[in-house]
Amino acid sequence: MSSGVFSVDLSTTIGALQIGSLFAIFLFGIVTLQAYLYYDAFPEDRWTYKTLVAAVWILEAGHTSGVSYQVYHASITLYGKPNELVTFPALGAVTAIGGAITLLVQSFFALRLYRVLPKPYKYIGVVCFALSFIRCIASIYLTFQAVAARNVAQYNREWRWLVTSILVVGTAVDIVIAISMLWYLAEKRGQELLRISTVIDRLIGFTIRTGLLTSLAASTLLICFLTMPNNLIWLALYTFLAKLYSNSLYSALNSRQSMREAVSNSTGPSRAKVPRRDATGSSIGFGPHAISIEMKTSTTTIPDDSNPKTVRGYSF
Image (cartoon, rainbow, N blue to C red):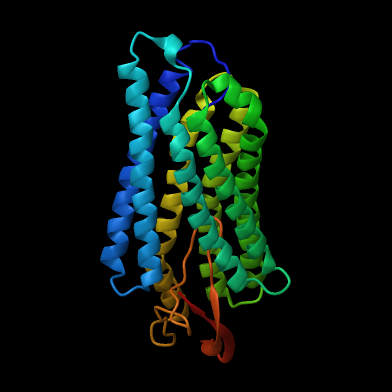
């Protein structure tokens, strides 16, 4: 996959791809470390989460291999032949892989929205999942078109509208999920005791930090694609965008232990019991777009000075 006709300026074409690939490989290393930490910290986690972590890592390995091969082919195999840099089939092939990674991650957080938001707002999660699924199908279709394209100029003329649509939808889903969870956490903060509000403040900060990163990266990629279609800077950003999503997912899963400890400390070790799972056996995740809190029907009484107050239990 690539952009339209571009001048043979190595600094904004091959140079940009090389820098992007370095970031991609670096982030893949962090993805691998995060995956290892997950399996080490949560050996008894649900099989669905274990499968999700493994699937994302395998997809990332394929994505990184495709990016590395394309950069090698462009900078080594075609060294001294810049005029032959008219197609990038390997990068086109990993478009589908990137779409699959984005679908898995966004679906994870969309499900959290569906579970924690009240009606009718919970259906925001359904809409986000549907848009992400359509985006993935479009990415797969673009993969076939990019591999079969004879040159980037033809590809850009025919499919620029679809590439733009995919980038816009992905960015919109990121922003909607992040804003929805920030609204939810802000609402809950005003309803709880001071000590629980402190924990919610931590969740809000975590959501902003991680959600802002992926949202800004996706927005920057879209801006570069629309304003600089004749170079490969936007494509360099695309080479590591999927890895930001993967790291966000792994960070969400791995942060559960610290959040449990924060809840335990906020309520007092002798007064609150923080379970690993909710009533259905589901572990609760935190992430860049949706840091989820599952509400249980049981209550936990937390004495506050001489007046006991009751808050609903949080399960992490």
